[in-house]
Amino acid sequence: MSLAFGAASGLALLLAVPAAHADDWSHHYSVNGRPAVHLTVSDGDVQIQRGSGNAVDVDIKSAHYNISNDVSISENQNGNSIDIGIHPRATHWFNWGINMGTGLKVTISVPFDVDLNINTGDGNIVASAVSGRIQFSTSDGSITSDGLKGSLKLHSGDGHIEARNLDGALAADTGDGNMAIQGRFDLLDLRTGDGNVVVEAAANSQPGGAGWKLKSGDGSIVLRIPSTFRANLEARTGDGRISVNFPLTVSGTLNESSLNAQINGGGPTVEINTGDGSIRVERQ
Image (tube, rainbow, N blue to C red; front, side, top):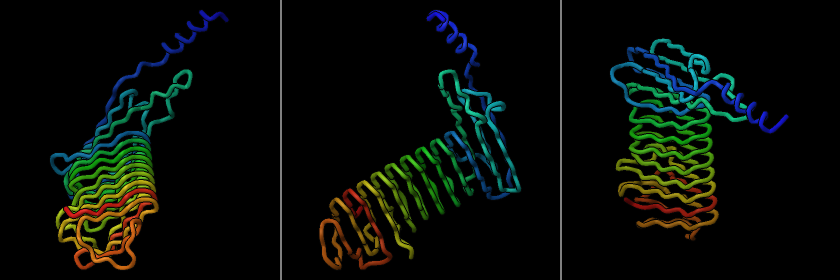
């Protein structure tokens, strides 16, 4: 076969591939109380936003494929409970192994008071102010939120977590990524396998009986607390230094990599641990 014929054949195969095009799908779910939404997306970004009225609206956009042909959508509503699964069908592989992907963008509009369980296998999650039992999970992607309130659980297998203006109890973890957290907290449990952690605890933040835990396998940790904060501080770093910019009541031996102390007379325990990095505790 001549080179000219091979090139022509390749071009013919390429032209035979259907052209990519945008498509969308939407559905409106009426509810008569606080909705509980469980969404699973195997591959795509998810955005949560405040809607108008007492309803849940879901909109799916694809950059490449016809949703009705290329994406499987399962939906079930039982009263105020809504369960939605969004899964691209068999992966569309082009010639020479080029995978264009589905490019799914899922937007959910919900009332302020709502329970959410949002999962994506590969994609980012972005959320605006809602209140309730909130669980966000992505296997590979970042989580960004502003104004969440209630019982909050955020998980990323590989990506950063940035959450601002929070109020309530937060448990967040990422396998590999930085964490930037700000708000008023009762419970705080933050863990990253590899990344820096910065926490700004707003006025009236106070650890409950379970205390707070901040941990990084490899990265620095900064905790900024209000002047009225009361706690027993236990800080450890495997390879780094610990610094505090306000008076403490120290117990035991004081050194650069380990600190046991009381803040404002003590209280529930705040544990800060990093395998490799500095620790700073600052009063706002």
